[in-house]
Amino acid sequence: MEHIIDASGQKLGRLASNIALILQGKKHISYDPRLRGEDKVIVKNIKEVAISGRKADQKMYYHHTGYLGHLKEEKYKEVFAKEPQKVLYNAVFNMLPKNRLRQKRLNRLVIEK
Image (cartoon, rainbow, N blue to C red; front, side):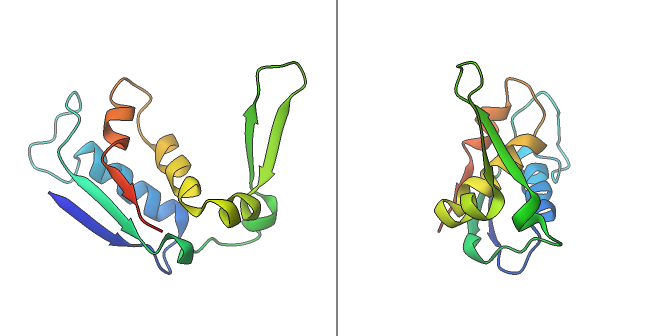
């Protein structure tokens, strides 16, 4: 089944948790945690997603290059300005269970600009 979600005006965290539930298959009667699920999610209008409070200035994204002392950080608003779909992808990625099915479930997430 294909779910089409309009992200305009929705909060980032609530949207991501809803998508994670759909990708896991928890919205089906035949839910089984060991199966990857069957639903596909298409998200539209990601540029209009909302966040609350001062997260645009305070929320940080970190990644390490692998070299000593090379921990890179970026603010939410910088990442969102460059790639708004990356913000939602990371939020859903972190809300899915950390197991071998995570990437298979994420492959069924389509984020349109």
